[in-house]
Length: 251
Image (cartoon, rainbow, N blue to C red):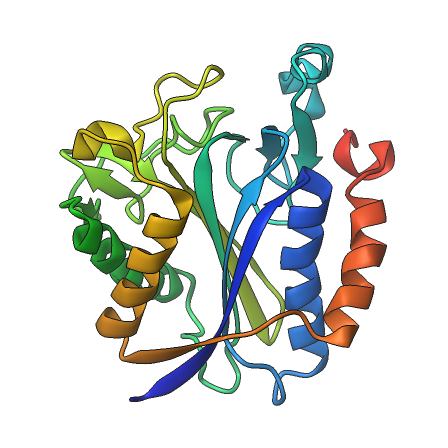
């Protein structure tokens, strides 16, 4: 067994709180990189919500329509395109790069985590692969992530299933992404896992498969845990930030 990663399995939370937890883990790890453990987190969204990339223009989105439909809205600290989070499993990973818990290279982190994601999906019956650089039609300008393409997408028969995005400090990396379980009304082009398998999969069953896949593919021991006292405190501070118009709707 080469590594021990901390495992956090959360239920549904609001858009603001979900993004606050991910950033809190990142910031606390950046403060204490030698004390932090690589953290793999699984979570869901309630209510369904649109998250947009850090650098996206607010003018590209109809906030009145999103909110009148009962959906949340949040700007992520990571880049990439917008995502409609609805009946899915979201995952995040935080680790120190200086201490060798993750490669100090954007592409290598994507590929490392993709090994675990692909193994987890194969464990539940989905034969998928990383898109790879040989698929040269790369699109990173569309508003929604589900339309964008990247060499690091996980695809099924060349159709995108999983996209991810990252945020780096000098010492720590955060990556998060999502796996759609069911079709959704806002981005019907999304490929849901149920379409690949021919049947529905629960959040719990997919998390279980992911834990087995990551442990086997990356030679890990996943240790169930919870947020530290400092992470909980920072989460509360960031939940306020992610709830503000100043953060979410900045030009």
